[in-house]
Image (cartoon, rainbow, N blue to C red; front, side):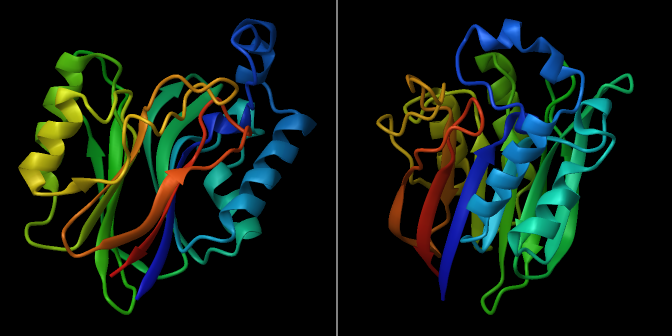
Length: 243
């Protein structure tokens, strides 16, 4: 079967387009706006072409998203029929940070994974995708420091289903050549489809290859790369796979 998959850190639809906007648009971190609604709709329209989407930095119903779950909004406007999400960090009534999986196939065997580290608030979600040839997909958002990242990928390797078709996708906050990504790939005998050339952050002038897709040997990649979109401070990574 053919499979189109995308991973995207959507930055809660804030849509930062320059470093200075982290400061000048700080209000977007706290309150909902028409601009953020439009950005979320633009993201939904982009996701429509994919069979599975792994999302990071979604807001699950804080004030900054108008107390609405952004995953549910995306589900209703993108052609997906199934979703699952997990919450990592809550900041008062301002924001509810999390990861999600959207799918055009049913999801089962879902696990909410809280990642270890010196600072709490990072996580992953894994689910079985009930496609004609079922497989597991894991959407992940790692911490910033290498020490925490190494602990986190060791934990993920322990939680991954053994000897099953598996895709791991997300914002790793480290490069394809890093010890972290190599450790994860080697631990699970997976292949990283992304390379140091696949720079996805920041979206307005990409210098870092932070976002990645890894696949088990059950998959063959027809194509994989960065998509030139600027709805977030990250660009999405997408792949066409044969399974």
